[in-house]
Length: 202
Ligand code: GRF
Image (tube, rainbow, N blue to C red; front, side):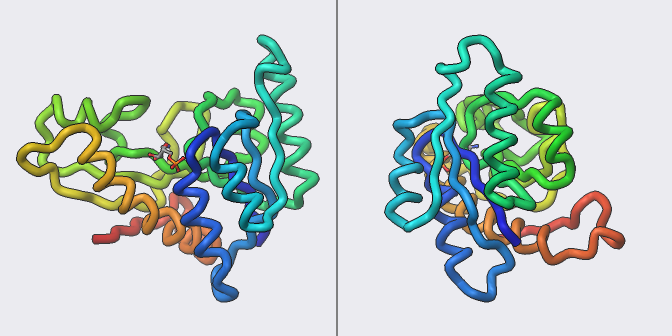
């Protein structure tokens, strides 16, 4: 299945997906890596991996969010993508894109949703004193970080943790979870799992 990746920065989750997709048994083929940020290190990484890349800079669209999303949508369609993975894509999506890709767009979020949607999840998890934290792969809907959960991975919060230490522990799980959740999503029978199936990795 052709799958496109949208990213804005570092691209370590994109790397995990690209690496997984190099296995001929993996059900996704990465057909495009697209960024709103022309300087994203993730784009360089994808280019080095020999994949088609594209930058569609939101700044060249001024305040016209709709026009930016139309350009992204056109590029996704042109790429032949049948699903899209957001991997550190830092722009909020409007209902135009979430509707166009409803049921076919995945995101990874660095918390155990529905706890801590939005930014600064590791700081907030530490401040809340939770003992378990982690990451979630979910389908993208209009509400930010709200769609049906496809998979989660949990990590302990340890004494002496800082946001950076916790983030690194979670990120390591993200890299395992995202390919696993995408594989599960692409191979599941939607008739038997309308809301996505639970998937837990240790
Ligand atoms: C990850 O923590 C991801 O969960 C969040 O943004 C970060 C992206 O990191 N959505 P990377 O670009 O994949 O390295």
